[in-house]
Image (cartoon, rainbow, N blue to C red; front, side, top):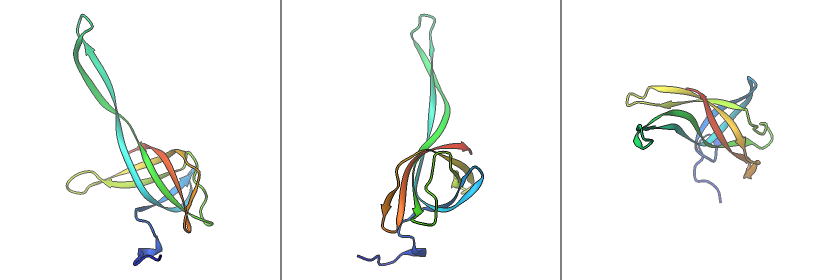
Length: 127
């Protein structure tokens, strides 16, 4: 079965990102999905008898998951420590913030037609 229409000959949607290893570019990869979540650190404020008296939270580490495509022969397989930068809109005016996303752990490569895919856990280094 052939696709009715494929933009720029990329069979899957997503965004492109230049991925680096130790400040050396590995090339441009297609990031099919990137889902980030902000973890929180919670603390409790007990009363003088050790009972409940409220709680607080502060922003913690931003982590997430991604699925990244690699060309079968032309691009290296990704490894933990590889990273890329993406921009996301953060307000109603569309002002973007840059996120440096670092790959923490990654799955074995899986083939999908002419492309290889890797699922990975990521962590935001700076934003």
